[in-house]
Length: 174
Image 1 (cartoon, rainbow, N blue to C red):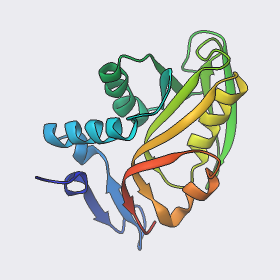
Image 2: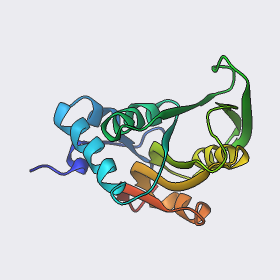
Image 3: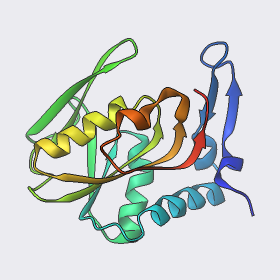
Image 4: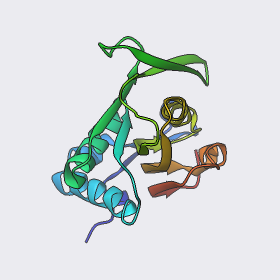
């Protein structure tokens, strides 16, 4: 039986020399890989008490929606600025070069809701941290962060030390 890491295509020297790019699309392009990814994430949620699953655009949607479906939970999208049609709250955060802004519908999270946040990759942790802060600003409680892959060398887990963080695959480097 294949492990999830067996479905990941690693591309050396992309986007620059010395970097190994871990391509999540190779998981998505294989039905068994996709099923294993969703099942593995779902296993991480066994015994976790939560009300909703939230996912970050765009790959958090890909993995979070089937989890929500399987577990019969609502799914809340956290999107890039300007993509949601109703009243939103937003959070701007720093990127390696520049900044980005994400938004969530103001009425998506009710005070006291327990939320699981899903994304494909934890690198530096900035995007997921901004998503968690949005949920907390609306009165929600982030009970777990789950990822398909973690690049441990970028120390995102340290940045997110106050949260319960779990990843299916951990790569030691960047």
